[in-house]
Structures are given as structure tokens and as C-alpha cells.
Length: 163
Image (cartoon, rainbow, N blue to C red; front, side, top):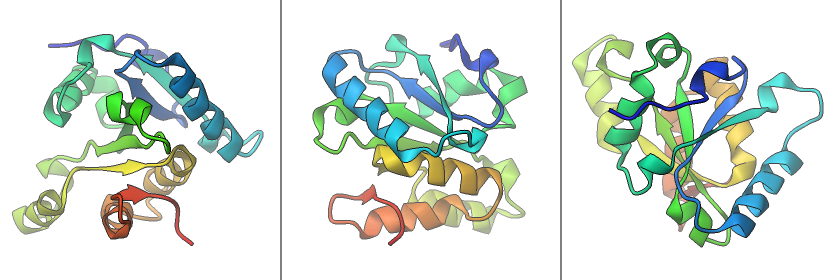
């Protein structure tokens, strides 16, 4: 089991970005610069906390979720995490992997859960989409599936904000 240091110090209103790839500092700086440009000054819902996790480099979604679930006090507070992985660093749009933390217990019945899992538990988002996704999920204005569906409609399967 991987323990993620830094998760316990996160701001309750901040999106969590788990950085698993450290191969390209310039790409990382470009991605974080886009995150900064897309936020509105002074809005606590548009901040983010980075957790460095080189031990999760190349990890699949299940391993990432297992690492987060080790922090029980935070697991219930997170509806989505964003992963800056090798794909994030290699692509021009630096799309992060958005992963839902929802489990079977978060649904009223098996049918609803299976419908969500069938569509997927993850999608890519450009950095400017992180704040919108995080805030809308935290406030329950939108469901994960709405963002996932939007990403699936994109030719590259990337959420680029609603037009």
C-alpha cells in the first residue's frame, strides 16, 4: 500500500492533483501555469494542492484509488482527484486524468452504480477544466458522468469546458 504524503495537509476546498510523473519539468510548469491562469483570484474553490507521488508512476486507476483510500479521514471528502501522469506531460494540452472516488456505497442501488462504472471512472481534462469540475462536484451542481460524457464527445476524449 502506497501512503501519499501531503494529503492530510490539503485545504478542504482545494482540488487534489497527484503528480506521478517527474520526467519533464517544463511540461509541469506549463500545466501549472495554465491552472493558475484559469483560476479567479481569491476564490478558495479554485485552488489546488499537489501531492508528489513518484511511487505511483505508471500506476493504474485502482492503485491510485487504493493509495488515496489509505487516508480514511479524507476519502469521504474527495469526489474526484486529478493525476498528472506521463500522458499529461507528453501531450500538448497537458490533460490531467480526472478520477472519481465514488464507490458502490455512494449509490442507491447496484443498477445506478453499474451504469456509471460502465461509462468509466476516469477521463482527461485540460488544466483549465480542473476548477470547474472540482467545484461543481463538491457543490453537487453536476455529476461526474456529465463531465465524462462531455469528454467522450471530444475527438481526443478530453474535457475542454462547456461551451
